Image 1 (tube, rainbow, N blue to C red):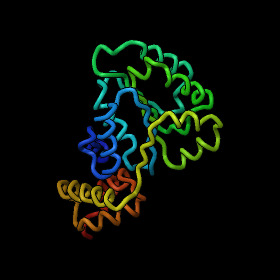
Image 2 (cartoon, rainbow, N blue to C red):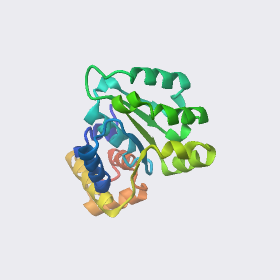
Image 3 (cartoon, rainbow, N blue to C red):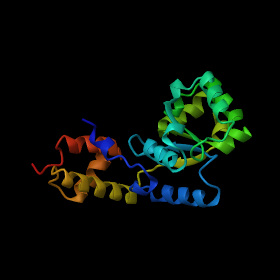
Image 4 (cartoon, one colour):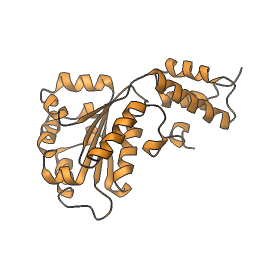
Length: 218
């Protein structure tokens, strides 16, 4: 069976709970310049929704067949050349191509250097959106280990997910509602706030604990 955190993963930006500031800023960006042609750099603690937000952005602007999601370690120079080639023409369906690169701190120095020029190509900007995700520790690793990472990151819009009170409260309510629906809840919403803090804000881990019955009243 599919893991609980996957069945509950939001598909659109409007379905995402918490992260009010981030969602508001994405809404402003969508209204002003649009999401197409952007480069996003999403950081935050593990399990806080980085990949979920990346996929939701992609769903806003690209057909599923035009979205590619890979781990950074699989991004090769050949892959970049292929992606640059497909971005030279307007997609037949949907607004653009979308590339999601997870664990972005794993990008090689050569790839980081190539991305600096690739992302300035006029057609790449016109017909594609790029989304990189990494943890806070991963971002620091990228800065410390790759001399040319800073110029590359300056081309991206930073999207920082943080463990804030409003976000935790919204997530706790969502967890409580899901647990209640699945009949594995025996505790108040405040207990789910405690659960999230115990999990360092990791929503994925919290769902795993709920599926294991840890929130039953025992």
